[in-house]
Length: 84
Image 1 (cartoon, rainbow, N blue to C red):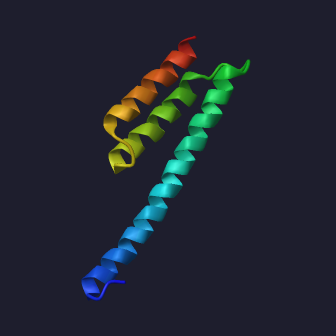
Image 2: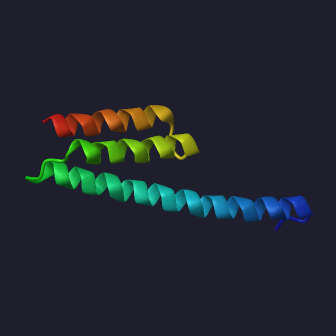
């Protein structure tokens, strides 16, 4: 346990941020999973759903939850799935 006041505050802040990041990451994964399931089934995803995925990935990259390159790679893969 931290002894200094500032270290206690830092510990509390890091725990809150960790929970926020876990929530954001989990929601992103579930969004990608539903999108992939829609692509693999008979449904054809629209451009609006693809834009929604782009938005989610861009927000995650902006917040630092994933790198920009990973977001770009996922966006490219999602666009390729729609194009098939």
